[in-house]
Amino acid sequence: MNQLKYQLKTQLSTLHAVSPLATLDRGYAIATHHDKVLFSSGQVHTGDNIEVCLAQGKLTCKVTQTTLLD
Image (cartoon, rainbow, N blue to C red; front, side, top):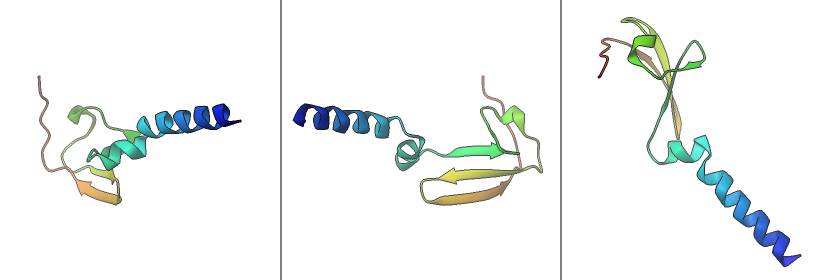
């Protein structure tokens, strides 16, 4: 029984480490546009509204400029 408890605790720690919420706690954010995650500034245009999910709350932002990086 102790071995099963240890395995469960280890698996829960691993699951938490890769959790999107844990990533947000480290200072990252998830930006979305029309409920799709943004990976590139080319996915939005000037004037678009985007949502930014933080560890504690969300922001609604208006795009004022986009720049593609090499």
